[in-house]
Length: 191
Image (cartoon, rainbow, N blue to C red; front, top):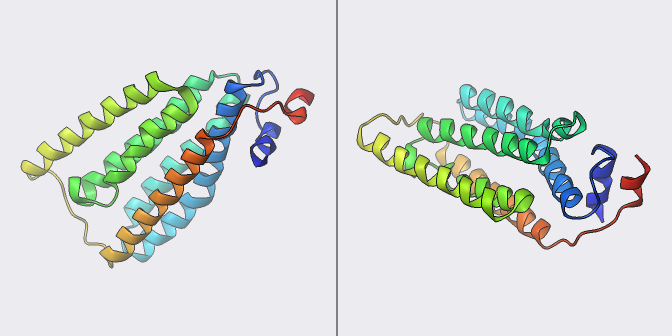
């Protein structure tokens, strides 16, 4: 399976089984982020919203580096929460600058509890769900108070299309990862 490739960057002391599988999933998501963040930065530049591109690049860099936290000896739960926290803050910033609850970035909040369940199980998933719901309530009231801005991107339909298509692709990858079984990897034992 392709996920065993990530054993090369994961620490050898990770036990085989569920924890190694979760670390592989984190590494896969970090790799997807490392590839997509620069592309999204270019997209936001072409749409005339360079600030969003920089925020995406910075948040994406934090997310992409989370497997290195594992290499440095940090627990998987910390690396997971750093990854999700960066995504969470990135989406809050984008929602506040792209129209609040009506922005195409809001559905992406679903990835926070999905990734938490994938990497940590039900309890982290419920925690991140509660945090996302709190932000949605905050965005609702911020919109009512006029505290949300709608940045005039050059082509809103392009932004919406890429946003929705990207979410479908990532959600599918996460669900497919949830379907994988624990595997013992010879590469994981060599480290």
